Image (cartoon, rainbow, N blue to C red; front, side, top):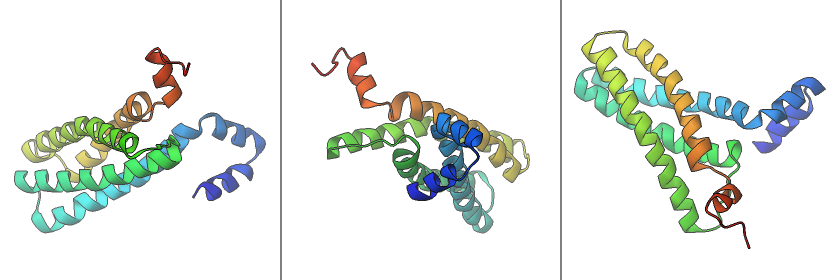
Length: 164
C-alpha cells in the first residue's frame, strides 16, 4: 500500500506533490477515514436490513458497526496515517487501548445521534448515519493526532525526559 501511495505521489505535478507531502497525514486520514466509513456503513446497513431499525436493532447494528470500523481504523491509522511503530507488546496494547478508549467517546456520541434523530424523531435512518459520520470522522482525527498516536519523542520531552 505504501508503495502505491508513493508511486501516485511521485507521478503528480510538482505543486500537487508538495501539497500532498505537506498535508500527507490529513490526506491519508481522510482516505482511510472514507474507507472506514464504508466499513461502518456496510456493517451497519446489512444487519439493519435483516433486523429492522427499532431501538434494540439500532443499538446492536451501531455496536457491531463500531467494532468493525474501529478495528479497521486502528490498523490503517497506525500503519499508514500516523506511521506509529511500537517496539513492545506493552506499547502496542497501550496504543490499542488508547485508540479504543478515544473511540468509545465517538461511539456513544454516534449511538445517541442514531437513537435521537433516527429512532425517536423518525428522521431518515441512512441520512442520519451519513451526517453522524462527518462529525465522528473529525472528532476521531483530533483524538488520534493529539492523544493516541502522539510521537514518542514529544511524549518524552513533555514528561521532562528528553532522552538524557
